[in-house]
Length: 279
Image (cartoon, rainbow, N blue to C red; front, side):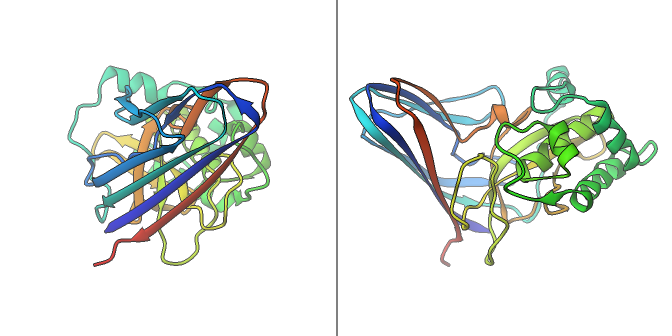
């Protein structure tokens, strides 16, 4: 499927600031059957935008805004072709991968209540059935509720609430898999639907109802390699998903991160549009 994505981020400051450094993870990934044909990123005020590849293979664009300003606009545009299903890359699973994607993190601690939940949905000696069972269990037992959590919510709190957004579903899936010895990584990206979809809150920001940012999970199975699963919708990744970044949890893949000098307060406004490319 050929998709077009327009992602606009507006930083509002309560008073003028003199300097800001910003990182953006918005360029769709290459590989696993996905291809990014075009990507552009523009800023206002205008300035030089640089980039690097982080340790997980994500493209990070970064820029400094040195002049006095009370507003910054970042406009990212992508044209992407997605595969019908996720195609696991034939790369070896390294000891570093095992460490990264089995170890606890701040968002994904290995808590007793999460392990107990995971074991209720586990299949004996069958990691694939266990991963799919955990995905279905989260889908059935958690309520999608954008008002229940925020961007700082950790997996144990979301489990106690039994509700949350795609970020929380993904963190719980990570925690459940890792507690059972199944490596798992966080995926951030976009979800396209010709009809309205649940409003995603993966970034923890207030956004319009047509926002389509999303979060899901890859699990590593020895017999299949990486398998991409979405516990929010209880399905495998399809052509409607656009992969942007992967990491240990949300902290590795935020769409925006930065610092600025000054005493001003900051508000973030995000608009996302994902549509099918014209034939």
